[in-house]
Image (cartoon, rainbow, N blue to C red; front, side, top):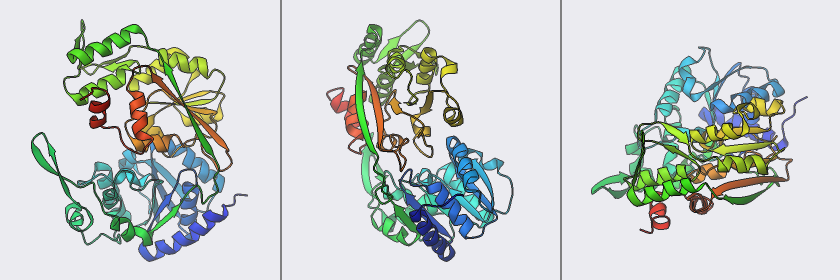
Length: 412
């Protein structure tokens, strides 16, 4: 028989009272502390009959498994954000929005935030927002996460710009000789205003003792790969028989070198190809026989892995990795960094690294569980490549930016 952990029961009771008073609650619970089951427990506590759970596509199967395990007294519909237009029209009494921070674009709302706003208006349901990192880059990200909720604490501000007058220290930045407003310096008062509707809970409070150990491997790529990278740095363009690689601005050069140093490239035509499978070969050789999760950044890197492992030896589906003897799951970093558990994996292996500090901190935690004592994370970097410089930035919780690239890689 399913039983909540003691801290989950306490949170469910507290959240249910907040919901009854404010109509919504924000669960700021760190990864692997059981946000999904807690949110379902809240819906059950409020005696809801129809519950909608909105999440990322990769997380759907995991949420459905939690629902089956809990076996509550309500019907659950699970859908991903991109498919909200396909939703079954039922009288949803509670809607759960997973990874709510993805709604936080500013100063203008994203399409996702607008879709969620319309959904809330249509059903008038109880709302549960969930994220382990509610404002990963700026407190300003909170406004569009809650702006569609009738009783949100910022409801008097009908637009982000009006909200910013009281809650954002607006700066001006010069870009290409033009000055634009920078709204990223949101004030701490944003979180203070949200506190009555928020419940925060950490892995330490849940008594997690998992230790994440990281090891970096450097591999030497093929000579022609370095030749291509050096030519692009020198000339800012490489002309082939049918395709062109262009790095005529620092931003494009950074992106192209990031691709090349992991063995792939995207051409100006939009086509792309695998240049070098050295990294994939190293992963296959080093982790032979182990059940591993492999994170990649660029789509062509998945093709490199498929070339080396064979399509039948790896999967991109979580259910296959969990329920079969398939030993390798490949996930794109941004889509796989949230909402899924890789508890079955012996190790996480990074084919490449993302510029985002959020990607670093969230994705490396995918194996963490309350009972696991250690998680092993491996980074595969190329000699002379850009990856180590990116790593140095993100472990300090800083995004790797063009400014870093110019200073560290181009000596500008």
